[in-house]
Length: 293
Figure 1 (cartoon, rainbow, N blue to C red):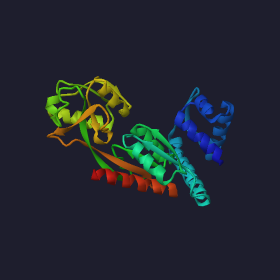
Figure 2 (spheres, helix red, strand yellow):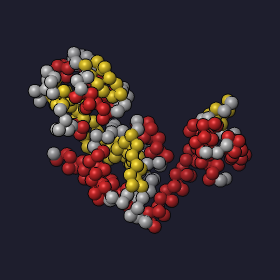
Figure 3 (tube, rainbow, N blue to C red):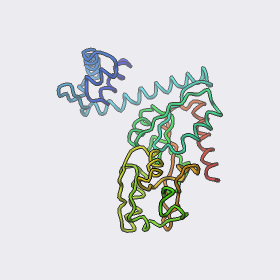
Figure 4 (cartoon, rainbow, N blue to C red):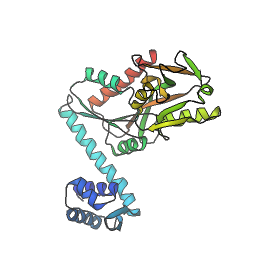
């Protein structure tokens, strides 16, 4: 069994389409089909249900996928370990995040400590992040909400209060605190349903008898500040997104303790380079300092 066969198999299993998989692998479709056929002959069973160019893993394929992913995962960890032994001062840090409000400060602190390490960051939804973590494609994930799975280490690094952001000219702008019931008639901008912070604040509002009216729902939390400033609507935002130089006001929520947990995640079996270990240390120190403020 060849490593190339396993790599091709994983790509076809993820894309479930022979043409798209061939395009992604930069090979001809006939070459990819032959490679998959040789793998199935080697395994001794078909691995896919086939409908034209679309493929879907059958029961054999589902079982084999888990083993193939584990095998390539371990080989990649070996490659990373050797690279780190050869040159611990170089390398690339792979990071996935579902929350980006604290990212600039963390990256700035890490680059001051290890400016020789390249960083690649992906902003993903929770399911995409978990998939990469399972595959061993990232060193760390910065996630809210936390993810508790057997294969993952999950360290809660910060508990972030949720506040209400309003434009300077808003009727509530001179207040420092606001109750949820005072927001009943407001128009909101926010992230889409399914994001941790959205579900949390919607549940809190429902507990006092109303559902927030959203005139904007997106998947880019960083855009909310600009929408609030433009007086499109008000927003529930984490305290870590607060910028005292921005012309918007943040009000504490009275009578309800609404917060989100930020977690640092990594795969228990992933080899962590010295650069990755330094990054983990920076993240923990960053949030410890933030907690003191």
